[in-house]
Length: 145
Image (cartoon, rainbow, N blue to C red):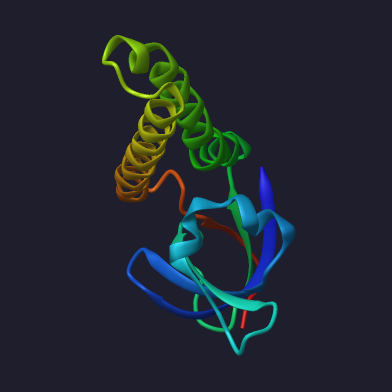
């Protein structure tokens, strides 16, 4: 489980917006859309599920499951690359059968597969976001206001 400390800026219903410091773990996270960098530095605001019922000013602990991070990393980085390779390999086989230049068919099908992979990743990301499995959670209040 990945944990980061932060301070609750505001809380509405089951959501909390937490100011925290951007870490190296943020690079692999697909929930980057729920975060926004403040002032161009390392400080950022993260939208999180407020399971601890934290209030503005509380110092809290944000967590994200390791398994979610591994799945997201594979989905974002490996899936498009594997699709590109599969498309290119298919182009190598299909090109001669259709009397098309093998390299051109390989390039074309690789590019199409790569583009389709990104569309799939985008759709899957929206689905995961709706389920809340990729959104950080405020799991503990470290110090109340």
